[in-house]
Length: 160
Ligand SMILES: [Zn+2]
Image (cartoon, rainbow, N blue to C red; front, side):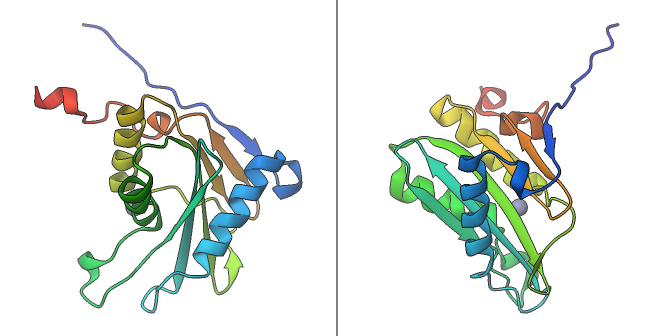
């Protein structure tokens, strides 16, 4: 028997002023995306902005539906758009931020399990880690790879 551990390490910034310029700019894009969310039921507006290796920024927002499972997360919306329209490019980083009552949430909002799975798949598709920036008003977390959010993830290898 062997005991093994999966440790997640990330950098925590206290506020936007501490954040490096490139990350700050991507968080601003995520906030812009959040303002375009369709969230008439939860009023929880999430935005995701993906920076590609050529400098392009792809934005996505959550899109709710009266039939709740039909809705889509901001991260999923942005990733799907990116793969469909920029499939030959590589994602470098993703910033995620959420607005509640028009204000940035105090805590960083992490992606749901489904979106973590999608981010992990994208990293494996391109072979490049995607930096994850989770922005809140009282803290900002930066992880060097989305794999850190999804240890022991299910991958294409499991299907072989
Ligand atoms: Zn999600």
